Amino acid sequence: MNDRYDAIVVGAGHNGLVCASLLAKAGRKVLVLEAKDQVGGAAITRTFAEGYSVSACAHLLYQLQPQVRKDLGLEFDMSSDQMGTIALSPDGNHVRYNGNEVSGTSDEDAASYKDFYRRMTRFADLLQTYLNKTPPRLAKDASLSDLLTLVRLGFDVRRLGKVEMQEFLRLIGINIYDELAERFESGLLKGALSLDAVLGTHLGPRSPNTILTYLYRLAGSHGTISAPAGGMSAVSEALAHSARDNGATIRTGMPVKKIIIENGRAAGVETENGEQFSSWLVVSNADPKTTIMRLVSARNVETGFTRRVHNIRMRGNAAKLHLALDGLPHIKGIEKREYGERFVVAPDENYVERAFNAAKYGETSTKPVFEITFPSFRDSSLAPTGKHVLSAIVQYAPYALREGWSDETRQAFLDRAIATLGEYMPDLKQRISAAEMLTPADIEKEFLITGGHWHHGELSLDQFLFTRPVGGAAQYAMPLDGLYLCGAGAHPGGGVSGAAGRNAARAILKREKAA
Image 1 (cartoon, helix red, strand yellow):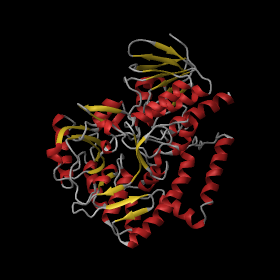
Image 2 (cartoon, helix red, strand yellow; image 1 turned 60 degrees about the horizontal axis):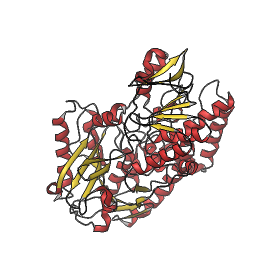
Image 3 (tube, one colour; image 1 turned 60 degrees about the vertical axis):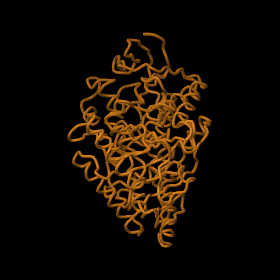
Image 4 (cartoon, helix red, strand yellow; image 1 turned 90 degrees about the vertical axis):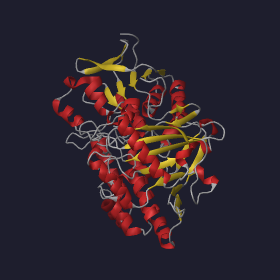
């Protein structure tokens, strides 16, 4: 083998970079190997048409954990900060919300929204505390630390007070559809909040766990939305700079072929070009299926564990749309200054549920839902002067499309998406000079994520906290000595938060100290 390291991190996605930086900061000799020529994984900025650049997968920042920023001293400029959300209506009577303020609804809905936001952010704060901890083991041989964490969780829930505790326990496993129906009259408000709960998931508003996914979205900075100047690469480059400053070595264009196993433990990695690097600690930022089934190989782990990993639900349902425009499209009722905000197309909660219905049968939505930004409006570096970029997440587009993803099915979904947007932006089609649609199959190929699911596994109660990614591996350590997960497939999940990478590094250092 070549050089020996204290730790090798497979993949320079944002969680891998956070983990590497913290391990290096603790004095470890760390090597990061990235398959692509650019760090960041799914949090990158790249060109999609001549002169036009876009955040290629993740395109907004709303979950980056304050603890990660603090620990690594992260600094990067924002092109848009505290963006509001505008739920579009074809007639121009839009609903707008930001923080606990909403407009375009009745006074009753506005008052109810304040109460709803207050309660949900309080519950999200409780959740956030445990997103930034290693989840305790639920086993007979649980450690004292595990037991104390469970006790602390119980006390934190009780500290909500009797009424709020009962409400938290009632809500955590139910669907958001029923909760919104009880609280609000405005279809646009209910549709937009439904979309917030299901974005990036294989869930509809009526699906169980969608209160949980909504709270997860709020558990960064109460859902405050920002866009980094230069796109999401600004975040990834800041993380890479931190890792290098702390002493880590990052090598790009180095896809890992396999994790080397010797005498039942990780001993290093071998790259596609045949180079080998040794270490008794290998940390994978890849998804759990890629890590175990491909890099480790199922023959090196116990059959029951392999089966559990195989059964992780991680089929993506979100596509990414990029449009190069010769100018901003007209949207009735929108002032020019508002093009820097976040737009959603989700006319009501039933519309969102109908869009999801198609995905249940392996079909794309005939009327998709959208999260839309015009990042070039406040960041001129992304498009030629006077021209603009539209970036949108489009649901639902199932990874396991019944007729299969091909150039034809991709184009058909692109055409449907543009036609739907045309109901809100009548001149959009004539302004398009280039278009790119990334299906979940394309996301899998470009970002090396099994199933094209940006959470590396569905967020649901049976794949969350104590059981993420699977039972017996919820504390980042895999059932092979020296092998850990640090990506979105580990607790707490996806989104550009850095929590999984930070938690993994802390768990590794704690275990080393105890050894």
